[in-house]
Image (cartoon, rainbow, N blue to C red; front, side, top):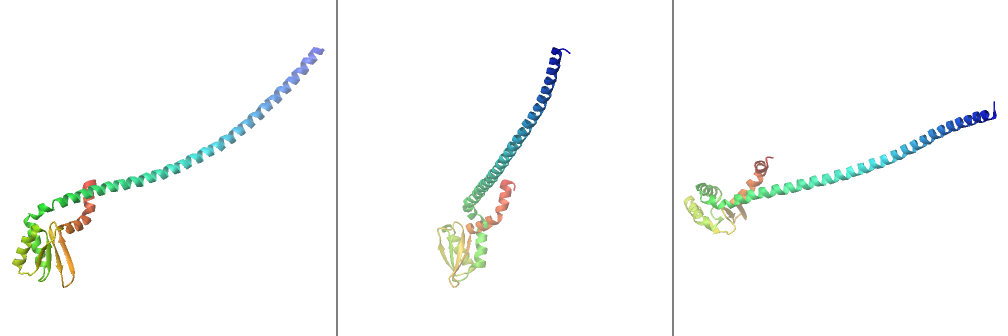
Length: 190
């Protein structure tokens, strides 16, 4: 073998060894890069997952607050409309006074509840009607005007220090409380 051949052969061997070592180094470098990449990816994936979870919890908390606020506002709005129904009914009270059933109701209450010596309070509009009913039922009771009464009567029993309230406002309040759920069903379909 000639020197050049020997040199070329030797260079080829060195070149092959270098290439093999370079391949091993590349494989090792790729392994290190992959491991570091996976570690960083895992770390930041966990951080992102934690961040998302915290934000989901915060969003759920805000959503719960909004739901409560919406329910409060809806309830307030429903109460407003139910109260509007109540006020409309109260506005109709003067119309009821002219109805014969109103006078029959007064007569029935007075006949059942009034006693001799009692005091009956009523509106100025009902003074004559109440006096007429008392006279026809032969009940000796005092009749006084009460400017706060729109319709109906209050009966005071001095011997018992007791007042019984038969005003339409009181009856309406009692009935309205009992019918509130039914009114809501009519208004809101609940």
